[in-house]
Length: 210
Image 1 (spheres, rainbow, N blue to C red):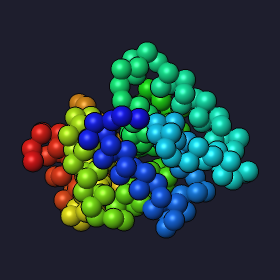
Image 2 (image 1 turned 90 degrees about the vertical axis):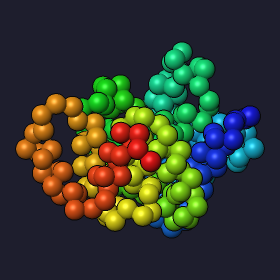
Image 3 (image 1 turned 90 degrees about the horizontal axis):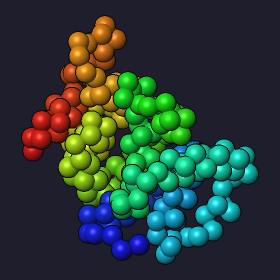
Image 4 (image 1 turned 120 degrees about the vertical axis):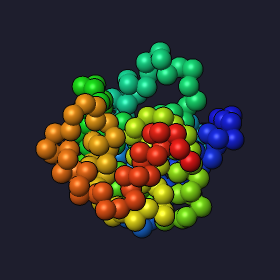
């Protein structure tokens, strides 16, 4: 692994988030956690290469199946020129899109990245545990134009006064991904989180405002 400074910071930040997720928020009981750990070991050989031997027996079959699907997805030629760390943050972004039941989620993404929203929340809690890590990841995701990346940036912003739970995550992503007139459900989503600074933070990112 010979990444740029930016990808190294992103990679290290996500690894710290995974450690905190496991140590403090029960990440080791999540399939997504082990998929991300295995992907991280693929990206950086300096990491523990025996990570698969540490997967709980009750999760091994599901983790192996998820890794097989992910390898097929990221094996597409369009990813061949991207930094390997894309597999790591791309898994989080696509899982966020699918967990939120976004209209932007493609059928193949629904098959490959089918994880409960609570797993995304666990990762975010791990990322936010150390303020300096949350701040670094916040700025990195904020620089990425995709709506889901702006949602991640807003959720990683430790100054935003919004609860970090599955409902909030799903509502925010659906709002950012939406195009066209708002449905009654989307209007309800907006109303439920409009009394926080979360919406302003996320939409400011989409408008490329600092």
